[in-house]
Image (cartoon, rainbow, N blue to C red; front, top):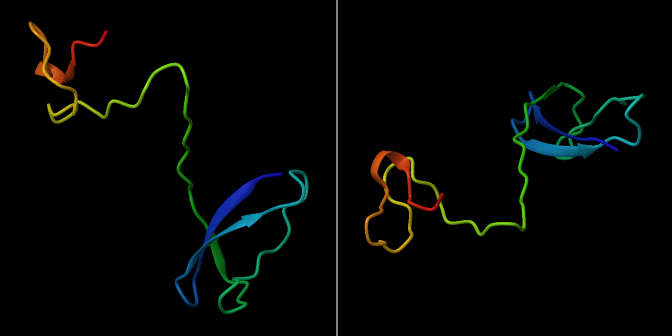
Length: 81
């Protein structure tokens, strides 16, 4: 059962809608104003794994990981690989 994110073109509210079937995507009414004038949005995808802890990103050079000798966040590399 797919969940899609929509934005109402009338009241501008964003909402999620759980469709009962993949093969039949039914019409969607805005839960706030009841309008059927909605736009399907590109939803973000999120996945988590239990194999490694979330240590934050190194894109800006600040990992949130305590400094280790001969390592660091130079070039986005935290010294964790």
